[in-house]
Structures are given as structure tokens and as C-alpha cells.
Amino acid sequence: MAVLYNDYTRARIGWFFGLSGLQLAIVAVSSVPVAWSVQQGAWSSAVTFLTLWAAVTVVTVVPIRGRSALGWAAASVTFAVGGLTGWSRFRARAATGRAADLDDVDLPGVLAGIAIHDGPPVGVAGTRVAIIQNHADRTWAVTAAVVHPGIGMRDGPDRARLGRGLTELLDQASRTELITELLFLVRTVPEDGAERDQWIAAHRRPDGPAQARVVNDDLQQRLTHAAVRTEAFLTVVVPETRLGKEAKESGGGLEGRARVLYSLLGEVEAHLAAGLGMTSVTWLTSPDLAAACRTGFAPGDRAAIIDALTSRDTDPGVHATVPWAMAGPSGADPAARHYSHDAWNSICAAVTLPVKGAVMGALAPVLTPTEPGERRSYLVAYPVLTQSTAARASATGQWMADLGQALRDKAKVRHGTKAADEADQVRLLEAKLARGNALTLPYAVCAVTVPKTARVAEAGRRLDAAVRRAGFAPLRLDLSQDTAFAAAAVPLGVSLTRGSDA
Image (cartoon, rainbow, N blue to C red; front, side, top):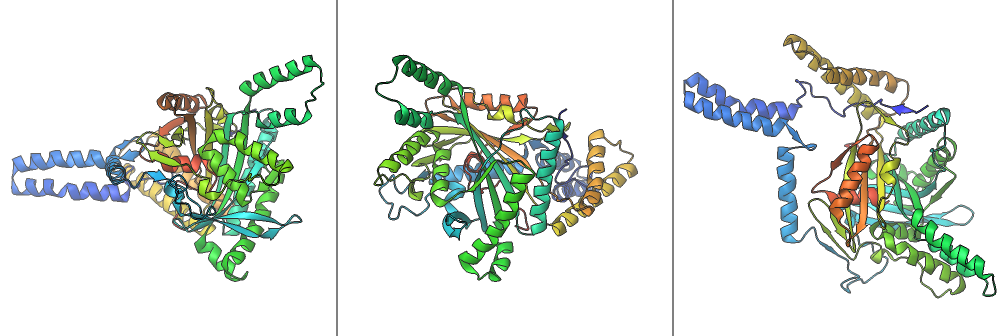
């Protein structure tokens, strides 16, 4: 039995025949010259203004691939200005010989405002968890590497239990009044065989049987080409506007914020292990996070990092960690339909939820690489609203739905099935919030990364086909590929949306 999730609705419902307040204002103001010309009897001017009004209405109302024409125009101008002035191009300070301190974070685009701090020692081992501070968004975040056995072999009741576990996690996050987002990031890349190479080198005997050597080499070659490696991360994001108040009671400063974050991490980890069935939850230190960031930009560097870590066990002089000055790409250039970083190209697309609902585990085909050297990744983000914000959003949505229905009834306009279903779900939302459920506005972004020797456009078409095969609709994030890539492939807490209360 498949677990179907279809309990979602539009973030906003237009209250006047599907139009928002801003759209209605633009349409109404642009119609004033038409009415004035008709009143004055200037029929030629009226026809001219009517044509202009129709053009303005189409530009304002009709969406084109998720954006209005005005939105496309603004994004195109911004993208062109950034390209002409060189603001959007990135060259690492280490690549140009200007890296004064290797501990300084040097990342491109939306990641430029990020700083990494070592938190106070915690636990028996005294681990210093990496705390991510985003100066641009004024948020704090912590990332964990998580391991889950998967749901491919789970039956219906088990999947329903895991779904309830996720619901309980989101409800708990909302009740804290601190957590604003939970970001689940999964990356799948063809296996590089680094760990197996190290194991064979350590256990192979020179006087061993020749047949065993042949069998192991053959298994190494065939299994490495056929296998994929998956790594998953969870990032907990807390805005400064909420964390700062709580941190004052814990001593203030970085240590006060770290104490509050550590308390939240304990609550989240308990839900991950119990409700979601995570077998391992490891909060990343600064070196671990730097390695995860570097392999996000350059998937092929993982084997070298594994070799360095193994060599350090026998030679303490080996520098096995990735400095933050080199954790990003040496160079990055955003293009209109893809993102170029180091020797790799990436294409990102948003995943649109289907009207009929989504089955738990349906995104699995999106993660399956189809060509050698191809890396797939996706981000599933859960922005969590506070109870007060959720109540206001629910009341506003219900008022818009009722007003829209009343206007349609007054104008004797037929109610469409889609509009009626959206209005019914908005009305049911208030009852669920009254029972203590959290309000979240989830979205997903997927990405494919291939070497520059491969055709990135073909890789993008394969990604779109995988999204459609999973039952969703892909929406290419043109003109914002760099931001989408940072969200979908680098576990540093970057989000495509930030709530107004964040």
C-alpha cells in the first residue's frame, strides 16, 4: 500500500477571480485612460489605450514558466548587469594568490556572506560543532550528516509511521518558536571506490593467492562502476531575530547562541532517531563541513580527501582537512540556464507538486545517475511558520477564498473544480492548526552535475525526464542557477525562500 500525500494547497489564493491585490491594482489603474477616453468621446484614443491596457493585463496576469513577464524582465536586467560588470563572476582568493588566512570562508554568490564558527565543546569527546552564520540572511544554522536505511522495502504501515514521524518533527520545530526551516539535502554520485581501494591496500598480502587477487580486482572494477554512493544532510536554520533574544539569557555572544542551538539539536536528534528511524545522526565539525562543501562543488575530489585522511593515520604530518579558503570552487560563472564551477557544470530545476498527490519515496528516480561521472542531488525544504504567523496566514487565506467565492456567485461565474478544491483545503487548514499541527510550505529543488567534457544541456534533459518519471513537473530555474545550486548541493543552510518572520 502506497502512502499518498496530497494535503497541500497554494501559498496564496487570489481573492478577485484569482488575481492578487497588486495584480488587480495594476489592471485597474491601467484601465483609467480607457474610461477617460470613452467619456470624452475620443474613440481613436480609446482604441489605442484599450490595446495598451490589454497588453499590460497580459503581461501582469499571465505567468510564463512560473514568473510574470515583469518578473522575467527584472531578472533579465539584473542578470545582464551582473554579467557585464563582472559582479556575478567568482575567482577564489587562493586561486589568485591572495588568500591571507586559510580559515577565512571564500565562497561564491549567495554563500559569500557565510561565516563558520567552532561551537563550545559538547559531549564526552568534546566535539566542537560547526555553527553556520549567514550575515546576508541574518540566520544561524547547524548541519548533520544523517544515515537512513531507506524505505524501498518498507510496507504501507511503516511508511505511514515514518510520515507521522516527519509530521511530529515539524510540529516540534514549530513549538520551539525558534526553528524557521528544516532542510533535507541528499546527494547521489557514482561510487569512486576510495574506501575499498584503501581496504584492499591494507589487507592484501604479497604472498596471497593469485586467483583471489584476480577475483577482488574484478569485483572492484565491476561493483565500482555499477554502484552509487548516497549521502544525506539535515540543516536546522534559526533566524537571528529569534535566537538573539534567547541567547541573552544564556550569556549572549557566540557561546550563548551555541547553547540555545545545542538544546534545539538535542530535540531534533531525538525525533530523527525515534520517529524517522535515522540510524546515525552526526553533527558536523568545521573540517567535516568544509569537506562536504568542497565535494558539493567538485564531486571528483572526494577520493583524494579519503586518501589524505587514510594517510594521516600513518603519517601525522599529512594535512588531511580542507581549509575554508579552498572549500569552494576556484572559479564560478553563472549562465542563464546552467551554473559553471571549476571543471563541472550544473543544472537545477524546481519540483512542482502534482495535484493528485505525491507518494512517499517518489523522488527516488530523481536521485539515480544515468551516465558515468554524473551527480544528482536534491533539497527538500520545510519552512516552518510560528503558530501566530500560521493563524494569520490561515485567516487571510480563508477570507480570500470566501471573498473570491462570493464575487463569483455575484457575477454568476462558474466555479472550477481546481478553484473549489483549493478553497476547501484552505478552510480545512484552520481546523488542523487548532489541533496543534504546524503550517509548513515545503518545496524541492533538484540538480545534476556533470564534468565540462559532457553536454550539460543533455544532462538537464535527463534530469527533467527523471522528474517527470517520478510523477512531478520540473521547472528550470533560469537566471538563478547559482542560487539554486547552492541550495540543492551545498549543505550550508541556503534557502530559496525566507519567511517574513525570519
